[in-house]
Image (cartoon, rainbow, N blue to C red; front, side, top):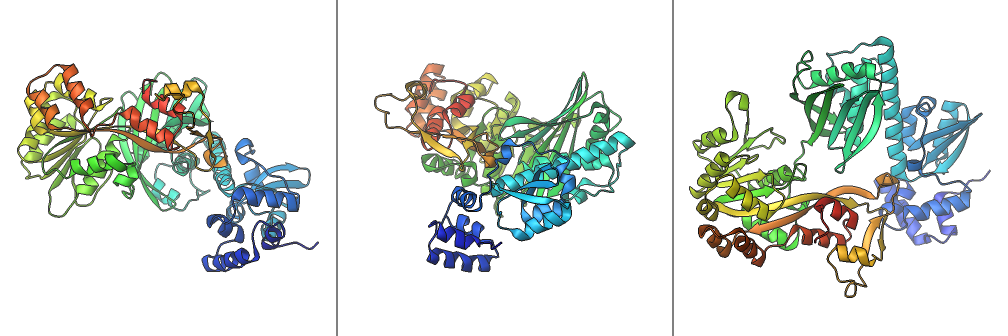
Length: 566
């Protein structure tokens, strides 16, 4: 049978020209990439166009791997190295035939290798590259988990010596390792691959449930048999240098791994529950490459206000928001920006989440009296220029921070409030004198994190009248407005979202607001002064702009704001 090459198929179908083919082939040789990759990367064709042409010309079926449950046993039929080398996924077996999903069904070398390894007739199906890559990771990751669970069931033993960092670095799990180590490694490696922020290991009545927080939402991944619960927890505790014999009180620990060249710190927490200890593992990317104003999503006037705030030589800048809103990342961004050789920059943290060269980072230890307030007093005796306080929790810490700012220091900190105005109220509630706020506070940045629409399946739609009204828009004046949503695709696991962005509310205190504090004006006058400020934009308005720009959806906006009053 005479096989056509991909270039010939595409030119015959009129999808690309001979000139485009020649340039793409030359670029492929230079970059050592396949033709299809080059054409898609350079936006000559879309992946969807390529799939449609191959389906028609070759008579092969398309398979949406996100909607297929691949039995974990399939990983035993095809070695992982072949699957990864050729981006090929074994899907199912029928008699002497194996069905495989691949992004390039014209890769006959791959098909022959599968035939040789499985001793079966091979039927290729087309899948997207990203979906195939992810399916491979999940399938062989699940197979590692399944094998480790089986081995643990048989042996009920766990090796507590071998460090996890060495295992994960290679991207492979050593078959000779204790099954407990392999199981924990596989779970953590899966979390890293999914870009999870946290892994929750939760004891239930009928099993040990593993859930992962991806883009701010928890997803159940697997259930480990209950009799293996203590072994898994013990392994996690060993990694975090925690007491494996202590099960009555909460514990905290840290560890470090490398996954495919990424350095990741793990912050580990245990909590006793009625069915045993619950474990949460937080992933902290050690790279600070994203700690920039662009990285956190500041643009336009917000970026101008941000640059104005951090250019102050003294004063207090507060970052506000609920737990999980990205406050710490924003503070680290400021620290990274302000970190210069000529300044003494000291942080006071609980815990230290990112290690930054050139910054003196101090760990809170309340057991020995090292509180935020006491630590801040000690730092002031260290000739600091800039101080970053992990969190203002009480009036004492807040007052020391304000007085430090008045005496010529720039102080950065976070605070648990829901808005810029609520931050002003909170400072008054915890006992900070109004004149101190007026003299020291330079600005407040309130923020939330929203899921972004998946760029691969993003589509516009005409909103109905209720949606327009809920976003504060006039249905008549906004009849030409288009909103966006994600249809769901393999790249976003059919969720329609991929990644997160921040929405901000930024208040730079002007002379009018400061005067209201000095006069100890009533709350409504202070609030009116804030809203009159020309540089102030509410969180809801910022979120609306993100919706109109097609970065997020109406439903996500409502989820984050918990209100329709925009």
